[in-house]
Image (cartoon, rainbow, N blue to C red; front, side, top):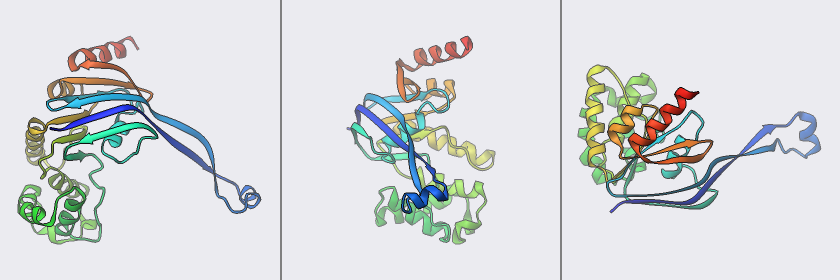
Amino acid sequence: MASIVLDNVNLDFKLYQPKGIKDILVSRGKQQEEVQTVHALKNISLSLKDGDRLGIIGHNGAGKSTLLKMLGGIYTPTSGSRTVDGKTTCLFELATGFEMEGSGYDNIELRGLMLGMNPKQIEEKKKEIAEFSELGSHLYRPVKYYSSGMFLRLAFSISTALSPEILLLDEVVAAGDAGFIEKASKRLKDMIDEVNILVFVSHSMPQICSFCNKCIWMSQGEIIHYGDSQEVTNMYLESMLRG
């Protein structure tokens, strides 16, 4: 069984600004000073179990992607507790962990290790990843020579080769030509159908309602509404119409 439990989670970021030369000399070489603390997530409490499909909506800067990254372990809560039980795949920050001087095949191994696969699992998945990416002989070339579309194809193919219990998804990923996008969309839908728990950030209300049975509406780092996905998205759309 997979589960996610957040108990009164807060996340603060410290913002700094450079000092002038005079200030650096006076402060004996210290080059930065703290100017403010940003309270990015505020008192977030949430409990998800097998079968839950949670959508996260809100305006830009509401804290949606920050919450997703905190669930994925990229950010550590400043206070409160985060408990995530289950094999997790993050479909965001797809470029993280790539060695640009390495070949496509080198990066399949490296990124696979970062995603929690062992060498045997990587070897078993390598052919499938290569075929799905449709990159052919380009996989022998350093990825620094890839186009952005080729790079995203490889990153997507590796990240979706796993069978996670928990899927953290920031928008629907699209890469390459129409044929590949259709294939990628089907693979993503299959993953969503099979995972125990989905947490999905999107600006598309139809996608939220299609994929999710629960939804939270975030504003300024807080959850302001939580409930059925259709109900919460309707409230959100009505608020936008009211201005």
